[in-house]
Image 1 (cartoon, rainbow, N blue to C red):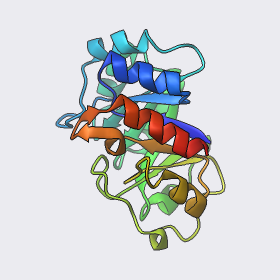
Image 2 (image 1 turned 30 degrees about the vertical axis):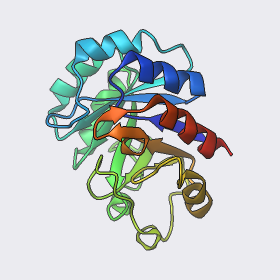
Image 3 (image 1 turned 60 degrees about the vertical axis):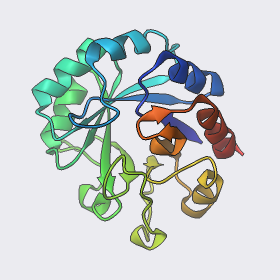
Length: 200
């Protein structure tokens, strides 16, 4: 089970996630998000992440030139794009040396078919309608999950992670608001509890 904790902004929460054994940590660069971080602050946190743990930058409806500039400045390895970004943005990110994740709502994922414009496979993250809201989606909205690598996100918590994994059988899970003590404030103990639940 691949586990990603997103929206990290402090050294103690990055250390908690890494110490708990996550596969990826995420940093949000989307303007207006309560979890937004600067490239400089993210770079200091990325430096704490050991080799083997993926570092992901989350972007939403931002020009690809800005995405690449911030990703390089932060030193992350993966670009995750939310919204209606064209296939060409994913191709440009891949050509620039970044791994990519396409984030879509459950209602929209079938339209992407999990490929970039030149046919390269992509990882998918299937999220709630409003990313970062903590709102789960109904299982009825996902009648046929992707057959390739995909991450389940949206409304996951330490309390419901095991149940959601059993229901959807994703390749991995992504959590943000579900491990917070207040909106935008990550809780190290909830991070550890989530990882334990997802690994069970």
